[in-house]
Image (cartoon, rainbow, N blue to C red; front, side):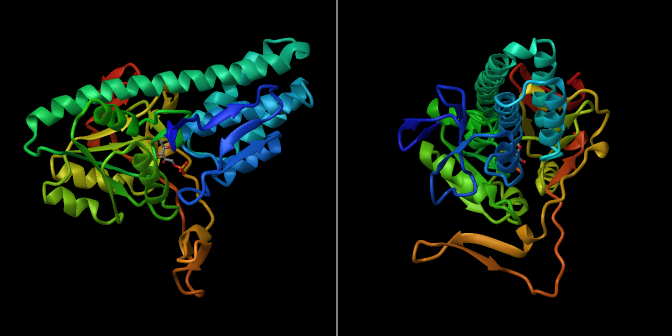
Amino acid sequence: MFVNNIHYRTIWPSSTCRNVSIIDQTKLPFHFKVVEVGSVDKMVHAISTMQVRGAPLIGVSAAYGVALAMLQDTSDARLSIVAKQLIQSRPTAVNLAWAVNRIIVHLTATLPAVRVSAAWEEAARIADEDVKQNQMIGQHGLALIQQTQQSGLNETFNILTHCNAGWLATVDYGTALSPIYAAHDAGLDVHVWVDETRPRNQGASLTAWELAQHGVPHTVISDNAGGHLMQQGQVDMVMVGADRVAANGDVCNKIGTYLKALAAHDNQIPFYAAVPSPTIDGGLAHGGDIVIEERHHDEVAYMQGHAEDGSLQRVRVMPKESKAANPAFDVTPAKLVTGIITEKGVFAPNKLT
Ligand code: MRU
């Protein structure tokens, strides 16, 4: 990804492998701030407060969290404590548990004396694989956009996306946004409808910021506008990411994705989820068993934004007497999903395993 024309990944280790740099996503789009994380506790904090977020990125962050923990103590006992701590930091995205389990298996098979270097190397491998997988998703998704565009009527190809499944949700390229960047770079006339994605507004604050950095035409819409735009023939495709895909093709993603899938189905608009293979939970028969993260009610009760004087402010948007609930994800049944794009190609949801 390029920020002000400088190439970045969203996470990278220091040259001495003593700490890890991340982009603090809670400050975007107003401030581009790089933060150094120097301990596993700080990495757990970064994941749970969503300084880093998005399924693939929290997996890679957790792998680096294990590497940070190894700097203090390389024992088996420490490994198992740290694994639990990281896996519990956010429950829904399977990439987190997948990455932690992968690095723990690797380290358990390694002598404690060499676990520090082994941990940093394995975390870097997981990060590099994520970049390659997302790059391939971009190529498969580009072919799909080209095919779909030929059969459509509109000259501009309009894609609706929900939440942020771009660079910032991964190490680089993104999942749902990777095909969009590839299409834009190939000279296709693409325009993106960006759902604001309440309560945390990852669409308005992160997706819109990324697309602007890359020069992709886009328009932010309120979460409730998508169905109307679909009825008006202004959406050619819906493309989202996912936090976990069950073996039967049920797609768990940011709250509100299900409603977009229902509206797309009613309007015969193709609905795709773009996911690297670690997001597919082959051991889970269907999406009904996925633990849905319930986040703090204040994320619904308050909104954060930039005031006219440039300061970052938090304002309450509902009465003090009212209760708020904040389920962070929902499950879109496979029957509403046209296809799943992975680094290996495009699959019908019932043909994943
Ligand atoms: O709560 P978040 O911001 O971590 O949720 C992110 C999403 O729901 C993304 O769509 C998903 O992780 C796909 S990431 C490529």
